Image (cartoon, rainbow, N blue to C red):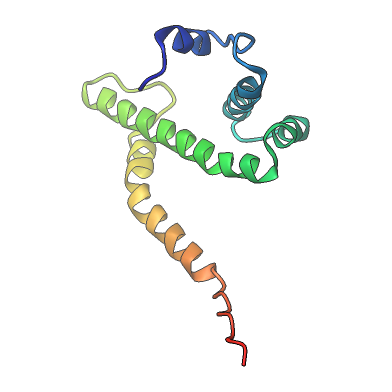
Length: 129
């Protein structure tokens, strides 16, 4: 939404050189993350940190994980639809497709509960006398 068609075409072609350097670093990192399946090269991470700072670099990770998860979930759903149409996706099985699609309803709530349970209560400031 709101991204010019020409910019989308450059992104799809992998043409990061035409973007401002500040944006190109983030785009290159996102591409590296996707291509390495989340196995981040330390030098690539360091360049992201040097460009945006530690806090912003850390803040990008949940977004990249959500995008990766969304792609996996969408591709799995497409594979199931293809299977139901009589054209199963190569290398996929009904059980793996159902496992991914239904597993979300079990794993996501469990992870949320785990994270909520691991939060340490913050100390309330004591009023001064």
